[in-house]
Image 1 (tube, helix red, strand yellow):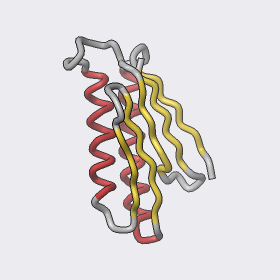
Image 2: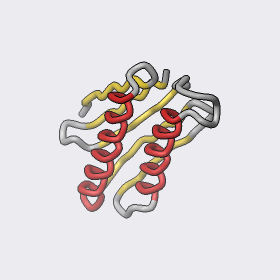
Image 3: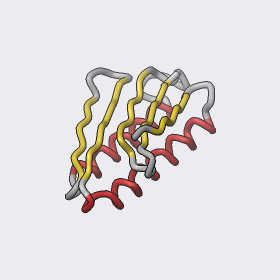
Length: 110
């Protein structure tokens, strides 16, 4: 099972997201759940990395692990809110459709 933990602040801004594990929904390299989660997280990381007013760090240190952390100025706030909402909505969709293969936890921190 892939376990995903997303952390948002009290304003709904994405602070971090981490995915670890293997979904087990198909053969390695052909697992639709792993592919969906990977595409969502890598696209968020790439998109946020190119945006003025947003600092993002992230890595995929080994197969089955990917994490990202964000920081932002006022200039990047609205874009980060939208991108984070998109990411979390996508992850929710995967977790709802494949509950045996993906567990999503969303925490709120200040």
